[in-house]
Amino acid sequence: MKLFHVSEEKDISIFNPRLPSRKDLDPTVGLVWAINEKCFSNFLTPRNCPRVTYYANEATTEEDRKHYLSSNVMQHVVAIEHKWFEIMKNTTLYVYEFDSSDFYEQDLGAGYYVSEQSQVPIRRFQIKDLFNELFQRGIEVRLLANLWDLCDKIAQSSFQYSMCRMGFAEQRLTES
Image 1 (cartoon, rainbow, N blue to C red):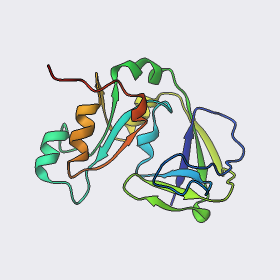
Image 2: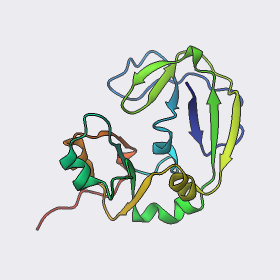
Image 3: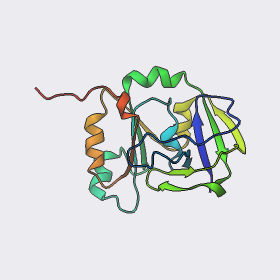
């Protein structure tokens, strides 16, 4: 299994465990985070770019597929806000690959794996054109004015999903 860490920092030689800020994790256990290959595309955005990502799996209903995917060939969507388009166009990402032997699954659906030990990457490569990389991986990219409506709907759908950095998203739109 391949595991990766995606960063805007180009010269990380060692990843040391950091205490998590998430409320659902033990705040006393430091972790090094990695993403599996299936969900790697969810992280091909600038770090703080809010995004709603989802993909079809065996549990995804035909109704959800028809409603939330643009065609039968698209199975994975990364949605970002309009204001992040230019930032994403001008961002270079550095991908660090890890030996997976010290990692364990933290969230299979989101593709998260963690290690409690420091990690030295076994390989590093860069991605300069994030949109092209997503397109080459068969990912549908959506640009929206606001992510919250999609976020709420996908969370109630039959898709496997991950919502990242939503604290940086535009405020929820209110109905008048």
